[in-house]
Image 1: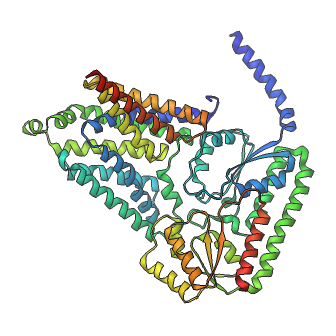
Image 2: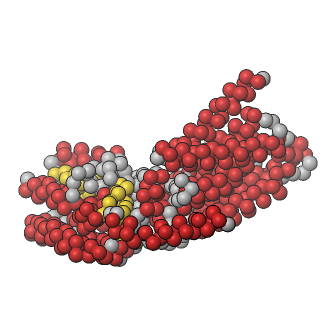
Image 3: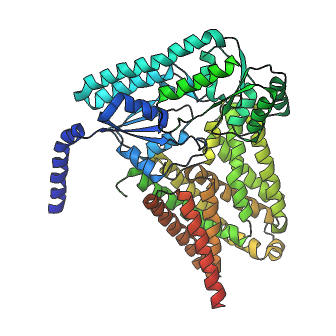
Length: 289
Length: 263
């Protein structure tokens, strides 16, 4: 009885300390993918402590087993950001296993009204990151209202930097609109759409992404496109490529079709904006050849 | 580590799967049908993708196809000698069908394929109840079936002469294996289900030839390996699947050494 009472007293003490402790400590944020983590860091600055789960561009995001430290980080997080649209189905499971009533969740797919079966590579859509950044700022302000002004100021800067990407896309559009391109995987899909590129061989890309074999007709159409140079660029997923995708890359090089490598996960040490802009640079160079 | 919800759930879910797989696996090893356990943990792929294709629940499709495959394997190979071929045929057909369904599937199929990669660290409370129910049903049916199952496994000719249908018993048994597998796969993953069905059963049979103690031993070994494996995964931050497979293999090796020294 007395130990129980002690426990209660201790709990009450801890509870009364909680608001202070919360204000002094940085807000813990966990992002499933490192580009969302980078965005959260930009919006939160030194007021947040961000952990990104998928942060290695060399691993295939589709074959991923979450570890105990990941689950632990999720238990302690105040804010969680992930992609959704079945890109990271393990997140839903981990979140429902590691319950935390005070944790806010931002799902990019839900913000943008996407559903199961849609192309999950949302971060290549120029409209995604501004929406996610606003949601992050809104949630951080709610969790830590004392720093409202900091979050708003950071958000304005982040949106301005993201605006550079959108401006760049608009500027490139004049040269890219209507051009025919192809890809080994649908990673670049939304960006290609924004650039007005006409994307060929969608069925082949689906097969590679779903880890099945592309049909003979799909492979033949793809090879024909490359050999006869029907397409001006081949987008190649550096990160999760299978044998048939590698073959297409080789064939493109032999036929003189420009190959633009894109990665699913952000390379370490980069910011989202630089990463996107450098990929657009590579595309521009490839198109001017 | 017990202060975390996900660790409590992992230990409970892992424990239920271990007991279920340990007991079912004991019979599976006894009958020399471990290949069936392997096959049944993979055929759900066709069910999940097929269901996604027609817009049904991938999980329902997975359970239905696994169950149907178990029954089909039992029907095609009622005698143990022929059962590898029956199992191989059903397995290859279902993997082929899975590829076909994905071919017709015109969007991103991650929600279907993700079903095969359960993670023991990602189990919620509803899933725990559901898993408990499936485990109780499987074990209850197995308890009713145990006597004829042993009879046809150890003395098939005699059993047949006494009027026990080999085919019916084989179908029922593989249906239980299928149910146990389908219930466990999406929670702990393909690899772990197969490991827990084969390793502990084989280890127990190295240590004792008696049935009752053997079953209890298999279930205890499975439970110990699972809990130790989850704990080691927590401490080292390595994947749970690695630790449990490593413990299972080590357990079998030790038991083999012990058995060969004591004879």
